[in-house]
Amino acid sequence: MLLDIPNKEKLYIGRVIDLRRKQLGLTVEFIIEGICSRNTYYKLQKEPILESEIYDGILKKLDLYYDYRQNTNAKDYSLIDLWISFRNENWKEFYIEKDNILRRIDSKNVKLYPISEALSRMKIEEKCSFDHLSDLLALLEYELKEMVLYFVITNFYEYKEVETYDYLDSLNIELYTNKVQYLFCLIKAEKYYNAVILCESLLKEKNQKNYHLAQLGKLYIIYFIQPNMLDEYSKELFNNVKLKEQYLELEFAFGVFCYVNKNYDKAWKYLSNTIKIEKYRTISLLYLNHMETITDYSLLDNKKYLSDISSLSNDKCIKAILYYYKLKNNNVSLEKLSDYLWNDCRKVTNQFYPEHIMKTIIRDELCWISSLTGDKKRFYRYIV
Image (cartoon, rainbow, N blue to C red; front, side):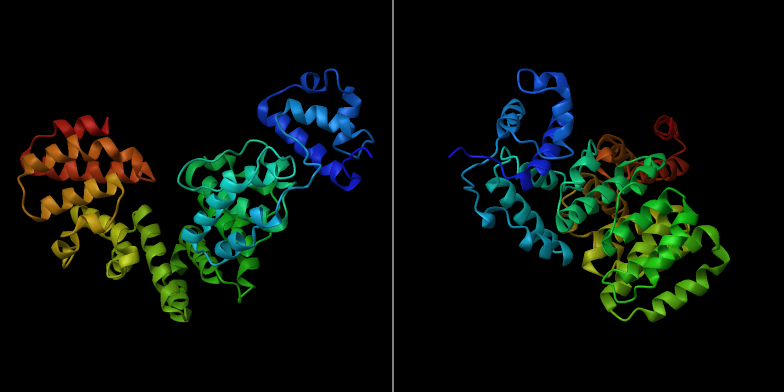
């Protein structure tokens, strides 16, 4: 008896074939040569065709194969534990499980290839590929699709230009957590009309885990379109938060938001509270020290917080600028402070996100030094 690919799997395989072809940049003519006609190739994506050898021939050209023996153990690529870690936002366990699956999975198996591709795109620390994303998402089960979308939306927020955000409108986002992420993308892109509509729909679902972040989204929207209502809504929001951890998360997020938007009075108010919490201390300390330079505020216990920088962050840029503030608080000479900013901090700004924030911090510190020394050469060179 000849082995054959079941008809119920052929349509899926045909779509995987087209995705892989596009990813490799191969022409239809190249992969069908000696195998089938162009019309037959396009038929693969719409309905099953009888001859399994056509699938096999094309898959071979794409460095993929169909496993007729079905040797794959479902446990080797089960996504249940990954999904649980994702929903619980247990990112340490999530990345461990993701890497374990990637090590075990046979990415050349045509049925597993989309799973391998999806897992490979789950990263935040660097730009991920958006090439042929819609084709990939169409091949994924709900849980895997929503996990990929989380990282896609997060990457868009951190790395994409706001004018490209229309692309996200074409994606069918279902998970509440991802809709909240998308809300912040809309706010960043200044699409306030769409943001208001989405935010109001999210606020109707009060029992959702990340409901407080939807409330934070509303706070951001009010900040931009109804600033006179900000104090009233922020008081209402913070008074109604029941869980202490959510309250602190809101304080930190809104404090950073106010800092980035140069509302230093409110930023100081919120970050002065969150600096006391280890989880939020590093960024709170960084921004509070910067605000101390450019405002009349003074940070209590600053030397205590700066005493052990190694425990605050492993990030080279953050460690460098916090060490500068440690030197500054220890009354190191202005000349040495200027040298350290210029020779050390300036060279690692590209490791901080968003980079323009770190550049602004260094510029303001150089300005402060030059105002005391009268030597503005480095300040002028830096802002150029």
